[in-house]
Each structure stands twice: as structure tokens, then as C-alpha cells.
Image (cartoon, rainbow, N blue to C red; front, side):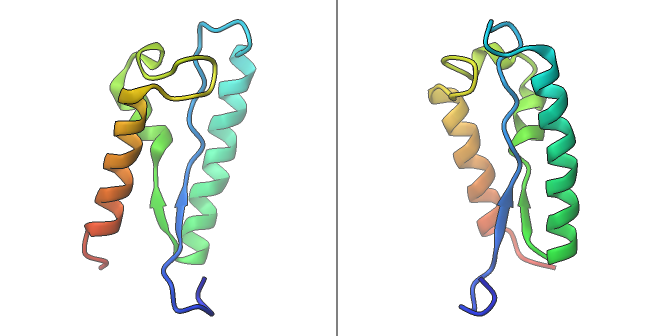
Length: 93
């Protein structure tokens, strides 16, 4: 990205639907661990972090944001859009 004179954006992994049978509790534990690594990598690489995981968790009810165990519904996609828009349009300090 830098060689192309572009600014890298790095997004975290979305949480899974905690009540879906294809989504055991260990899955969201793994997602949280991987997102810690993604946040660390964003800092190390000076990339813009788009913390979709945190944005979904702020909503409270994950079941209201997903159509199945991993795919967002319209509200989930709206959150993703809002988070990327904010990351892209905010001044870089």
C-alpha cells in the first residue's frame, strides 16, 4: 500500500451470532484474540484501524445485526459503512 502511495485501512473481524448453532462460544473468544492481534498490527504498521468488532459489540444485541452465524443484515452492513466512512473522513493526526 505504501509503495503505491496509498493509506492502509485495517478492519477487525466481526463477532459471530452467539445463539446460532454454528457459532460455539469459543468462536467469539478466538475472534477477540485475533482482533487484539489486528489492533496491534495496525499500530505497528501505522494503518488506520476500522474497529468493526467494537462497533458491533457497542450495539449490544449481536443477533439483531446478523442474518446467520457470520453474515451481517442490513443494520450490520450500515454499521460497517458508518465505521469505514468515519475512518476515511476523519483527519489523520
